[in-house]
Length: 505
Image (tube, rainbow, N blue to C red; front, side, top):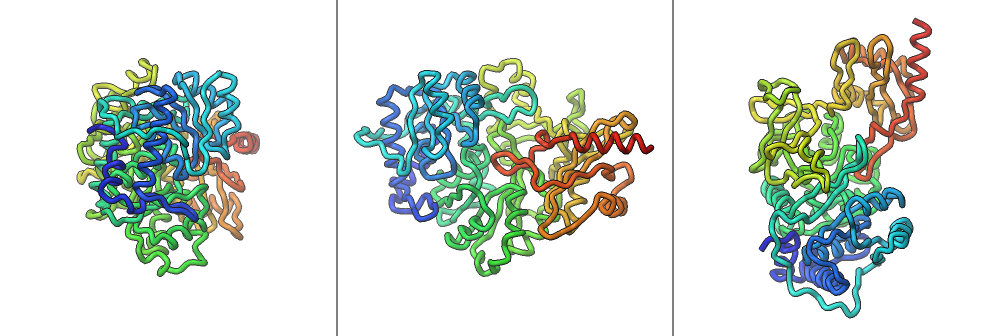
């Protein structure tokens, strides 16, 4: 049986009264989720939804998302999951690009989706608490589909050009959960929890599908808030959690009202989505008695490529080794593999690599060749197979002919006690080509000037890597998962600083 919902269905048959989902003030058993998804799938089928029809699903990390998502999977439809903060133009673009035939939206964030559906004369379903479908005839079981059938389309963030829809097949999603069930060594009595959005590949493919296919329980938090996450960890006696670096950092600064005993069951934290500063790893381990295991993946690899497993010593700065049946090569600009330890672009091949970009044959052939995905990330691989992400190729700063990797500079700046968050970016400079700028959020109650930080950084970094431009802000722009969005950082103030420095030179 090939179907993303088959594992959930089988667990409901085997242990119907076991808790599958936990949310504030409610619990859903496996049988409750199965039954609700079966009725939802039946209602969709009665409404004319057919296998491979593309259906837009806009909902936060609530149990009803799980119901609607698996309802779509049960009947072989393709789910296009989208950020609840999406605007009407953004939703309309995805509808037009994908040819979606229906929109389903959570009742608390449905305004823009309803507008698009009305203007496009599309069926619109409101997803409400309970996800009930009165009178619907439930489906009898998961539809057996081809593993190359597109189960999900996830639109990339569109760092260049318009967003592209990455087609993830049933085989991709099952391959992802296969890999993480093995490396996470989860058991049926594990209690997993996350504040990640389920519409994103990390929360959806790596966490939700893996946990529910295995038969463990999943606690959901929406929206993420550090104290609420800590309270959920304590209340639900979580044994494993998943998040991104900004979440761990926020939890570290919000944990004074909790003791180590509150998290005595916690044995593992899984991190992805962005590079994890070593200082955050050290502080988290010290505070919570639980190491953060870092992994690496992209939307185009179903969120899965590498991971630091439980039974190996994690190296600082490493995102681990390749997942089972996955291969990584580090190549130069001409596509030739580089020697061990040298920096190059990361290429990935394996069961989680996407089918391609929806209706984008040129973009697909550019990034996907002979099964190898060109990631756009720079990294190294050592003699033990440990992979380090140096930076994005687009984020590389070339100052006066020297390559400067923002992540390396950020790692050092995070060690300063006054810094809460930081992003290092390049700013155009007539003399050096690019100048190094640091955009900083200070820790509560801390004070720091650019001159003070520059002096401190000179003791930690080679001269050509030291930032010359500084901007202090209240918050850094972030995406749905909490990942810092460097492309959204305003450069006007930094450019003005660069001009002033030039005039004084």
